[in-house]
Each structure stands twice: as structure tokens, then as C-alpha cells.
Image (cartoon, rainbow, N blue to C red; front, side, top):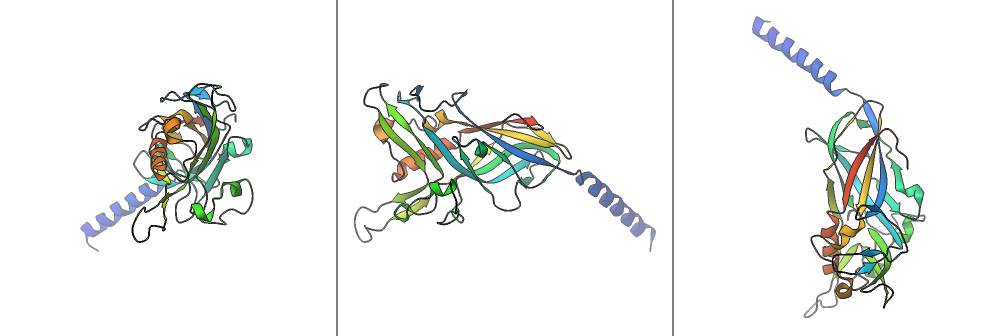
Length: 269
């Protein structure tokens, strides 16, 4: 073996050892603490005290939804799935046990800058019988509405003036429908899956070996009704599950609903 080849092999060996040492920093754990707010204040249910940009007064009586496909983005841009197997998380404001999720898999130690997930259930997984027990089964939709499961069910009341002609609303986001109006196939319905990706970029933290980091994931409910689409219950109405135009508006507003901050170690929940 000549001198040049020997030197190259030595360099490759050194780099290989260095690389393994650098990458092998151990693992930690991630938990998600779900928080629901309206304009930065903790959600209070069953009270007509909230006002959206369109001037509608509204309440929130119940809030439940799914998120799935969670991933963390490291500072170098690499993507780390938070669960080796597809995990769908159910959150219900009336069930405290669903408001905190200890994710099952270990996560490589390192510096992270953002969190991504799917709001709802992706089309390949959203089919009848996915869940077999409550409370998730309560989110199942009918075959006439596309089957599968709603991504979110938020219920409450709205009015232009509190106490005057209050009406119920069902802000259900899920599989939408497009109905051809004329011609051949006018009776055929095309179903549209309205799940959407969310990126939460306002977090930055370092996960050390054997550490647990709690990500406080905040949903600001007011955002569902204000940006980029001003939401006027008086014009849109109280039920949107069969209104694909309204589903699109809700989906686009929902991209800005979430923010997050991080606790080192286990937080109070």
C-alpha cells in the first residue's frame, strides 16, 4: 500500500469516528401540552363574551379536534418524526386527560427550531372504523358526508347583539363536498379532504440526553374567525360541514391558529 492511499484511509477513519461521536448524543423525550385561548386569554366556555372581527358575539361550548403526523425540525433543517408509527392525537377541551400527550418514542438530542403537524387526519388514514372506542368515535361522520372523521368539532352560539336572536353554530371542519349543478353527473358528489399542514416556527430549544421537553401548543380560537378571511356568522351561517367554500376559508384561517412555547422538564398541566 503506497503512502498516499494510507494517508487517505487514516483520514477517512478519523472522520468516521468523529462523525459517529458527534451524532451519538443520546435521546430525550417530547410531550405536548395543549392550551386553548381567545386573544391571548384562557378559553372560558359557555359564555357570550367573545367578539370577532365581523362584530359577531360568540361563545364556545365545546372544542375537540385531531392532529397527526407530528415532526420536529432541527436547526440544521433535518426532519425528526416524533413517532415511529403514525400517531393521531385527539384533543377535547372537556376531557383534561386529552390535553397533555406524552409522545411514545425517544427523540435525538439536539437543537430544534420548529414543529410541524397535520391538522386533522390525512386522506389515506381517514376512513370508517379507524377508531373503535369513545371519545374518538364521536367524531365519526356519515357516509353521506364523505365518511371518515371530522377534524374538528367546535360548538357554540352567536349573535349580532348578545341576548338577541342567539343562534347555534357547528364549526365542523372535515371532508367537504362539491355538488355539480347541471349536466351529466349532476347528482354525483365529489368529496374533498380538507386536512392541512401547520408549521409552528416561533420555538427554539435544545433537547439534551435523557431530558423531557414540554411543548405548550396554543390554539387561539379567535384566529379561526379573522385572518386571512373575516368570518361573519350572519352571512356564512351556523353549519359549514356541507359548505366547501366555508371549509376552504376555515382551513386557510387555521394555518395561523397555532403558536407554541417550550418548558424544560415537566411543566404543570
